[in-house]
Image 1 (cartoon, rainbow over the protein chains, first blue to last red):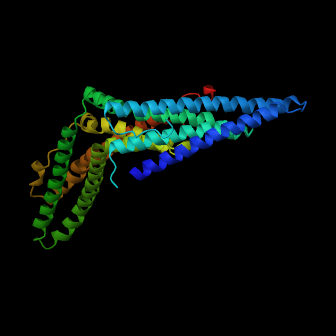
Image 2: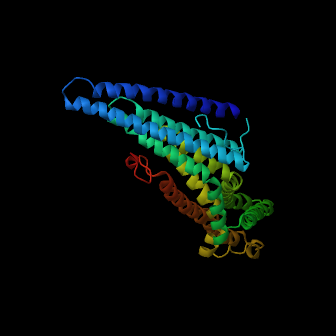
Amino acid sequence: MGDIIGFVNSITKEIVTITWAIFFLAWAIGWGIKGSPIPIFRVKRAGQNILEDAILAAFWLAMGATVFGLISYLVGQIGSNSIPPSPSG
Amino acid sequence: MKMNNADLLAISFLISQLTYSIGALIMMLPIPVSGLKKWGPKLIIDGIYGVILVLSFSLIITLVSLIGNYIGTNWSSFFKWQEFITSEMISLYLGIKTIIGISSSVPYISPIVSALFFVITSSLTLFLTFFRSVVALSLIVYNSYSLLLLLGILFITLPFRIGRSVGAGLIGFSIIFYIGLPLMPYFVQSLYPELPSITQNINSSNDTQVFIFFSNTILPSFAVYTVFLPATYLGILLSLSYGVSRAIGGGFASIPFPVGDIV
């Protein structure tokens, strides 16, 4: 049982770490494309989209980590051990 | 490795979080492939939906028991009813065997009587097997209802909706059958009030009359009472379960609320 929980926890932790790394990558790529001296609107728009998606996804990731962590904390405080501590929270 | 309800809930919660994180990851990818990126908001919604289901587990259990109490679900009376029907069938079977045994002392009649009553005993065995299968199903539902519910929630939380239909099906099945299965006696008895009396004719001296009575009255009654009406009732419960599972899990490719509106 603990193995499964540990396994899922570690995968989630790795995915959250990768996601934050990708955020910085997307941030750099997005600004790189948007700020590039290429006078093609569609290319600049693609950079803008990457930036928007990255910011939105980062917001949802942060919100999710907060809410999931809060739920884990509250369940722990209420007294049930059913939900272990959140890996990203 | 023994898992209890709390462990399954914990795993479902963590898998929901995993689904949510994968959704955020896909949404963040700097790859302009819309088919791939559409999965991001979907998975985020699925993660939230999974957590809502995990946190609603106690609420669902309470609601099911409240609804059951309200409409008169009573498992003990159901088990008493099935015991009564089973004992009736077994006593009928033994009665026929007794007739065959008595007639075996008559030299020329014995093979004919045995052949005639073989049809009835075979049919009774078939009915009894079906009826006991229904009872076995009811025991599974009665003993493992919360486990089935938890497995359904666990399947629904799996990423990329791979277990959504089976999870919703398990949830619908466990809820509907736990509430509805004990009401089977009311359904059967309202459509077919009572079984004909067996003992009044079983002592008849004429084997042919007994056979006619069995084949015309007793056997059809038992067929209706223990096979056709329970099977009809199970069909009704299954269709209700399908409706509930559609409501919980949506169709095979959609969920009950719009997905793309999150962003």
